[in-house]
Image 1: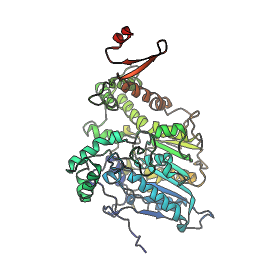
Image 2: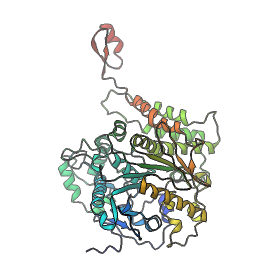
Image 3: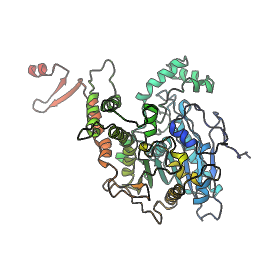
Image 4: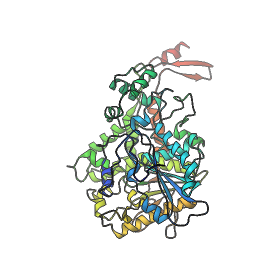
Length: 526
């Protein structure tokens, strides 16, 4: 027997670093929300069960993976009471290890990484084996996540370890395609951690022993400034068990090596607006962006994507090539010095690159085997408590669809006077997602939602006065193709300039070494 009348502690995490979108969401929740604290003993789940007569095959089961950049987050703030009561679905919210506790790796088999993802798989196993005790359907389990949770959902679709543990998926505002690390990207973090805690870097058995001797709060405190924790491609680091990710997500999706299930993906129309506001400071109330700043910000972001070669490498990288390609696509034509236009173009880039491109890529590949549905959330809330401190130019930022999905406008534990139109939008959002959970089709009586395919891309634009399919091409599908198809080629060309290669010559049947500066001399010799 277990006392399950209150939430278990949240997993270890820094508590003082909430981002602006998190703060705005938290102020919509009851002020007396209990704080469960943090502990390493955190791997619990919470079950919300509908009342009434259950279907013969059990209630549809929605398993929620919370957001927080794999660094923070908790199931304790996600109250499914309204969703469960109104829509008659069973909801399970899941905890998983975060930051250094969930995603540290030695880049070898000593600590292969992805522990937080394995926690999620353990939760799915528990749900699959036990949910019928709670009147849920073990054959209709829907995994659902936002941001880091959506990345998790996308990776579970791809991972062979997750196969057969769910039947549908909902991934919103999180791109699994470009959000994974590798042993190469994680190696510098290992060096930092070893130095930070005075541990031997090698052998890695010594490193892990040293770290395990550190108190948990000490580990957290002295690694909290690292915010790049997350899943990684682990087939090279996992020589004693099956890997969570046996290859890069994009390659696995392109090859068809994944478990296709009916899928919903979605994002808001201005995902990074709040992060942008934090970056520019409160003085720039209109978020205006000069042409010079516009170009330098895009150039800086583009060049950092180019991986620099080792010191002894003969390879030459061309980061300016990447910057020029991105600027060519996003710099307005004809040229303008209107700083609000430049601001909006920059924010379009952030949404399209970091959210829309990967989510639609995933939807397109899944659509070859199962139906996929895509939305963009353009509805700006009418309730003052939601949009206070969010200027009109910011549109609909990250997390702004979640109050409607979780039924906050209908909550009885609030002093907020929600606008009637917001309540109606919440009813629509809950109904569409719950309909999808029941039968795989999110359309409802008043809203028709058509599937998405690569050949016929179409998204539901969720807006005033009513959601409708994107018949006017409000989404720039060419921009998504730029990021999914063309940009990777530019990135490869910018980094694939190595001189220690060989090139073949069919006329001479020789292999000619190509060494920078000496090609002509060698050719004359032959």
